[in-house]
Length: 589
Image 1 (spheres, rainbow, N blue to C red):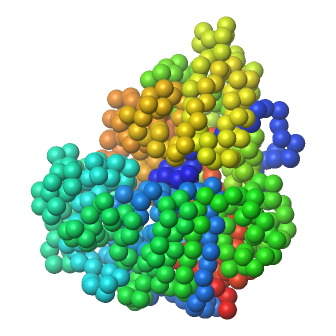
Image 2 (image 1 turned 180 degrees about the vertical axis):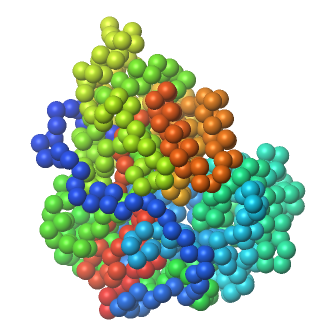
C-alpha cells in the first residue's frame, strides 16, 4: 500500500517505514526537491473505445524470465481478488493475472489512461450516477479456457460486500458505502447466501451487468479498475478458504507458485486471448517476484553488472546508492510519480488538543525520516502540506501554519507548553515491526527525535505487519497506542478516493479514529454535487479538515525509483499504482 496496503491499500507503507532519526540535518545536501519530483501530474484521461489487442511495444520480443526484487515489501496477504488491497500485490496481480471491468493503460506521455477491460466500454451511468451498466465482452476466458460470464462478474462484485470474510478488502470502503442495499446485506459467505440471491443491488441481463447505488457514484468507472470489480467462479470453486492461495487467472499470466512474504511465480496463461484485452501483453514467459528483499543486497545485484541483475527489476533504490545508480543506470533508473501520501495519525480520541497534534508535526524530523528509511529526499519523498497530492483535481496548497512545517523541536516544546504540558514530557505509545531492520533502526531514531520535541515515547515491538495491528480494534497492542500512521494510495486521482477512506467516521483506514459529524456530512454532500463541482469541493474540505482539526499529519508525497537491468526492455513505470509497467515489459533477446 506501501509494507503494503493501499489504496493502497490502495494504503501503503506504514509508519515504521517512515520513522525518523533525530534532528540536526543530515549533511547530505538534501536542501530542495530534485528536478523531476512529481513531474507528471496525476491527471487521468479516458479512452472508452479502445479495443484489443494492445498496441505492440516497439522492438519487443517474446520469451525469457524477468525477476522482480521488492526490497522491504512483504507482498500481498492474499491472492483472492476480492480480498486483495496491497499496493504491492495489486499492482502485480491486476497487471498480469486478474482482470476487472475497466483497467489503466500507460499513455504515450506516461500518464494513466482508463480503458475497458472485461467490459466493452467504461460503463453507462444514468443521469444522476445512481445506476451503472457494464456490458461484459464475450471473448475473455479463464485459464481453463472457459468463458468469463456476466454472472461470474456479478458474483465477484457481490463478494466485495462481504466485510466479514474480507475485512481488509477494498469493498469495505467503496462497495459497502455506495452500492444499493449494502447496509442490509452481509455478503454471500457471512450472510449465508452462496448464490448472492439476497442482494437486490445487482442484476444481469444477457451480457449486461447493472449495479444500483445508494448515492451518486460518478467514479464507478474508475472503481471498476480494481480487481475486486472482476469475476469469481461460482460455487465452491472460489471458496475463500482456498481461493486466496491460488485464484484462477483471467489475465495473460497464471499463478505457478506462491510463498507468502517470500516469492510469487507467474507463468503464461495459454488460454488468454490478446484480442480480448486492450492494454496487456504477454511477452515474458515467466515472472518471479521476490518479496522482503534486503535493499543493500539488491542494490549490489542491480549496480554491479552481475548476471543476476541483467534481466531483473528492483522496485526501489537505497538512498546511499542513489547517486551511484544515477551514474550507472541512466534511463534504466526510472522515477515514477504516485498519488500516495504518507501520514502519521495521532489518536483523535486520546490526543484531543490540536496544539499537541501540531507539536507532533514539528517534532517529526522529515529529511532524516526519509534517509533512515532508505528514501531519497526530493526524489522519492517530497514535503507534504495538504492531504491531496500534487496533480489531483481541486487540490489546494494547504499550509496549516502559513508555511511548510519542518522539523523544529523548539516549536514543538512551545506548543506543548501552550497546551499545558510544559512541565513533563507528553506520553506517546506507538508500535513498530521488529522483524524489519529498517523499521528497527528508524524507530530508534524516531524515538530520539520525538523526545527532543518534548515527548516521552514508548515503542512497542511487534512481529507482524504493522497494519495488521493498526487495523484490528481487538488487538491488545493497538488498544494501547495513541500514535499510528497510514500511507494511502488512492485508487483514482480524486478526493473521493482519498479523504473518505481516511477521515470518515468508522472508515477502515481511519487509523486516527477521527470522527466529526460535520465532516461526515460534507463527505456525503459532495457526492451529491454536480460532477463539475466536486473536485473543488474536495479541495475545500481538505483545507477545512487540516485547518480546523489537523487530525492527521501529512508527512510526504511518495514517488518511486525503479532500477531495470540492461536486458529488460521498455524500462518504464505506470502511474495508476506507481509500480513498474509490468504489462509492457519484455526481455531483450
